[in-house]
Amino acid sequence: MYMDLTYDPEQNDSGMESLTASKDDTPERRPEDSFITPVLGTSPSALTPVTGGPLKEYDDEPDETLSERLWGLTEMFPDRVRSGTYTLTTKTWSGVKSLYGLSRSVMWILASSSVILFAPVIFEVERAQVEEMQKSQQKQVLLGTNTALSGPMPNIPPMPR
Image (tube, rainbow, N blue to C red; front, side, top):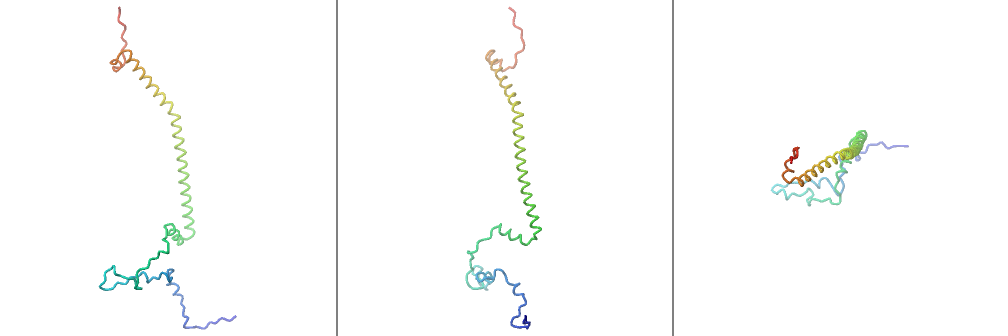
């Protein structure tokens, strides 16, 4: 197998052209389309692009979403950093979810236990208040309005006959 190793000055490729080329150097969008050349004596609103025509609107390209931008930024980090971030994020999220579930269970246990434990006390206090009101009403009916409001009657012995 024979290879031609002769130098041709017409094919002088140093490889630098490929480094200066941008991803956006397509016929639809050239970098020079976005440059504006000011002309002396014109207002800023009268500026035109280098090509001389109006600025081109690229409506055929959808706007990039935030999630797409963030996903694109992940490519600049090494795999170890990405996997560590993923692990940290998933473990944090599962920890928050389990903490939320645990707090719901604890709150349910505390609420139901307090109702079960304090309900008899509340019922007894309410029953005592109702009995006190009934005694007060009974006293009011038997002795009159003024005596029921004045408080308990002292023990006065009955009058002799």
